[in-house]
Image (cartoon, rainbow, N blue to C red; front, side, top):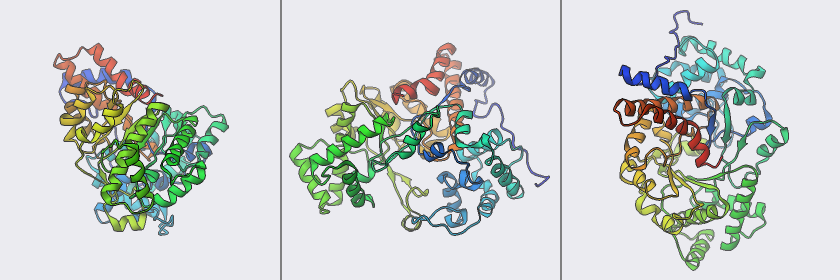
Length: 474
C-alpha cells in the first residue's frame, strides 16, 4: 500500500448547511432518522443474490461492473468498456483480468471528484469495508485485496449485507417473461428478508424494442393466450400481473420514451394492435400504441391495485455502436424534454379520479417540476411525484426537486426516496445522502420560521420511511 496515501474520512456534517444555526437543526433532525430501516421500493438489483446467497466474486464484479454511473464517466474519457470487464451484448468478455480493470478505475478516480458517485463510493469504502485511505493508483491493489478478501467471508454474503444495511424491503424489477424462480427460491428458503418483484412490461409493449417480436411469442407461450389477438393480449397481461402480485409485487413500472397516453375506442385499439403485430406500423403508430398501453395498464391497476410508475424522457441507447457491442443499460441514455400536462390527460380523464388508483410519475426534465408536475400532483388525487431520478439523483438535484415542488405539491404528494440502482452496496449510501439533504432542506425551513422543528422531525421520518411504504403499498 502507498504510505503517502490520502486519508479517507467521512465528515459527520457532510451535506448539512454551512450556516451554523441551520447545521445544528439539521444534525438534530438527522439523528432521529439516521437509523431508520431502509425501504427500497424500486430498483434493479439481482434477486439471484438473495436466492443463492453466494459470495460476490471480487471488487470489480461487485462495485464496477453493475454501476453505469461509474463506467459511463470512464467511457466519456476514452476508456473502452472492454477494459473495465463490462460484458458484451452476447455475454462474452474481453478477457480482462478483474484486478487490472480495478486498477484502471483506481487510476481515474479523480474524474469523480464532487460527483454523487464519489459520495456513494466513499461511504461504501469507509462504512462497509473499513478502508481508511483514498482510492488511487497507489492504493488500487490494497483496495482490491481488502474488498475481495472480505467478500469471501460469511459477513459479506448477500443476505448478511441485506440485514446489516437494515433493509426492511427491497423491490427488484422483472420482465413479464421472467419465471420469478429466484423470488420463489427466496420464499422457499425460509429466510426472513423481504424481496419483492415489480412488473416491467416494456419488451412486450414497445413495438420498437429490439426484442419485441420474440418477447411477444414467449409471452403467448407462458400464458397460453393468443397474444396476437387484442383481447388475448390484454388477458395475458392480466394473467402475468396476477402472478407477479402473488409473488409479492405491489407495483408496475413503465420506461417509455415519452409520457404520452391515449384513450382509443375499442375498435381503434384493436385495429392499431393488428397493424403492430403485423409489423406494418409507422413510428407514430408505435408511439400511439405505447400511449394506449399506459392507459390499459392504468385500467388494470384500478382492478388489481398495483401501483403504477412511469419513468419517461430518456433517449435510450444514444450510442448505437456501444449498444451493438455491449447492449442496453451501458450508460448511453440521455435525458429529453418531456410533456406531462397534455400527455397524461387522456389517462387522467379516464382513471384519475378512481379512489384505488395510484400513479407515481418521474422525470428527467427538471424544467417540468414547477410548471407541470407539482401542479398536477397538487390536484389529482391519484398522482404522486417520484424523487429526483437518475441524472438528478444528486444533492443538487434533490435540492432543486424540493425547491420547485414544495410550494404546489407539498411533501405529502411525493413518495420519499427510492434508490433505483443495480449497485447493491450503494443502497445505504444513497439513502443516507437523501436523508441528509432532506434534513438540510427542513433545517432551512425551520430557521426561516416556516416550519416548527417538531413538525420538521415528523416530516423527516415520513420522507425517509413512512411515505415510500405508504406510496408503494408495502
